[in-house]
Length: 309
Image 1 (cartoon, rainbow, N blue to C red):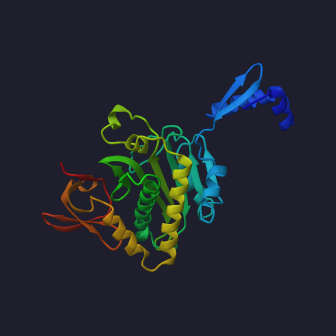
Image 2: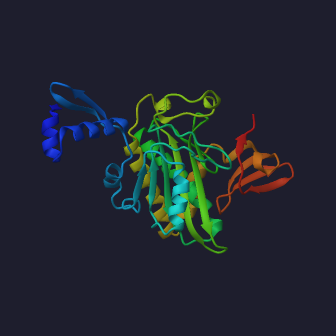
């Protein structure tokens, strides 16, 4: 349908010059508006933007529905979340971006954040736990991502890689970065950052062998709004269960092991622990990785774990 600039100006209570300016602004955000000199404007497609007005209604009833912040461009959603949490942002605050200029992974790694192609999401949580219990939230977030992906496309088989990655056919499509501010005995706040490669069609040469996207694996375009809403709903279920159900931690550990090919019976190296090598033997009661090495059993508290080739 084509609508004249005059009619749009009347509806908006402005003039045709302002309508033209607004149309140009919307085009800059990815909205496909065609201007027809003799007849007016035609809206052809609306981009798949993670706008609060789009996401919030789909996550009604969760802790994430009331404080959703959206950025077209930002340094890092985790950095924004940590700053806001320190300033008193309520639990359940969500930070979404179309593009990150300084997206972060573990350590000094960067997260490639192609504009409006992935989900770049950070949430603020305030669990009443000691800092040693924080790892369980990262594991729960991994299960939440896995559930959200499977709900949309059951054909895909996301694999959980301890402690914070998800893979499909050995290639990474999701990374989780949990950051914490804590006292000696209690967590002040956690910020859980989740980056998902959704609709990327290609990757830089140096990432092609190790990275993938849901679009590349499924062969179809995904609704980022639908996936983001599914992720937040799944994360809400996992987190509420951790707060309220006595057996939730054991359930998360069991399900993580069941849905990961790497945490039991695989020969791996742990790069951040002096080249530690051994066979994975499940998770301990806190969620840390158990490893059988030539010198006896070890517990891996952190580090980059890789399959030995």
